[in-house]
Length: 319
Image (cartoon, rainbow, N blue to C red; front, side, top):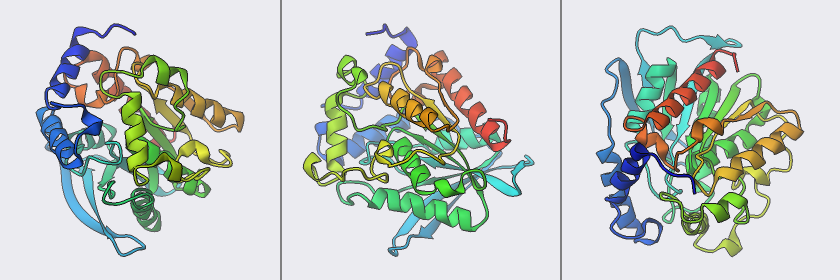
């Protein structure tokens, strides 16, 4: 395994100190508390010029979905094809943990750096809510924004990146008008336990192959046997066609069982002529979850800046 530099080692140590037991196999209530303690320990001050407001959006099933707006002040947002740009951020957490607070500082920073309005969503989590509640909530938010006339850039990390890519599958008809692109950060895209990275990094520091199995299964009642087969809303690479997907940027972590997912996805998109870039180099020496290390790791900080520059370029029609 690639040697981790001292900054990344410190990030891993600080993360793991909040997990007294194996993270993915603890009781879900305990796991959520550990996760809250962890992300609070990395919390960074939010930019003062970003206005933050919570709102509820009603889904088709009547569920009220909590969302959070981040609006940078004093910035003239560019327009793409007459639609104002809106970044949609979908948080990670294995479909089990995470909420509006878990990525609050990160979303505020991204909105501030990119200069675009950003909205995050607290989609329903497993095991209390089974698939497709999670993707349905994300689609409800995106449809709400499309109805309001927004041009959307999908951004997500980990499980949130999985959901972002599934949203792109479902709303690809808006590519070129109201769907400007997707930015997927250490995503799970293939649901394939046989990749080389799944073997090489099966026991990676902050995400293991065993944990991935746990997360996939808990989303569908705890059994892989009932996972939907060839469902493009469940797994991005289960779509029947990649044609029509928006420009896509992938940001894998090198030391991560999901590393190969990005290349598999990139090759599938290239085959049908979709513009895609797999940013492997900026993920060198990083582990799953590195976004939280952006203020303590030079490599993670540079990666975050690269991600923000990519979102900005998409919103300005430059990528």
